[in-house]
Image (tube, rainbow, N blue to C red):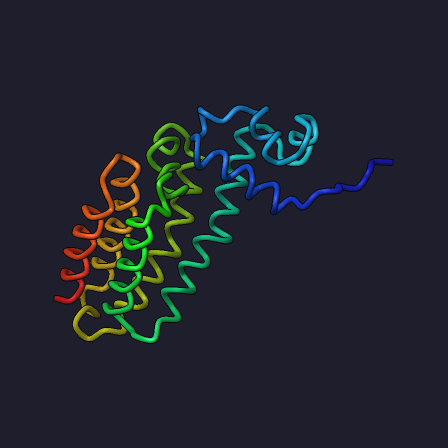
Length: 190
């Protein structure tokens, strides 16, 4: 009879995600992932499969936690429409400027690093971007100034949101990101 798992799978995925986020897929070894999750290598494989499967599961976990939290934040603003979307971008830009995202965005990193070479990862990245875009779209539809162009502006907003993380990962300073978001916010107010 097999022994029951004596660890929290969600917590282990969060720890593995932190390693992938900091070091990237290629820079993360199985031994580092096992050490971070407090699991032996064999237990890590038994619980999550190979490194690729673990990475896919961490992308799913990111969607379940971080993307879902962002969507809730966008939906629950005191303001509505373009103002809520611009407020979200400005809040993230302020966090970026404070150094909170020096490793970029896990989803953006996967999009740039792995998705071009791996259809499964590309599908996960796309699936996790969709709720953000939808939340932007729903807010923008509520605003008479942006309702007609809500779909296009949602695409633009998603590009601005993801782009700021790519900028920061590429070495841009927080002030540069803030300026870019300021321009994006102004475009949403058209």
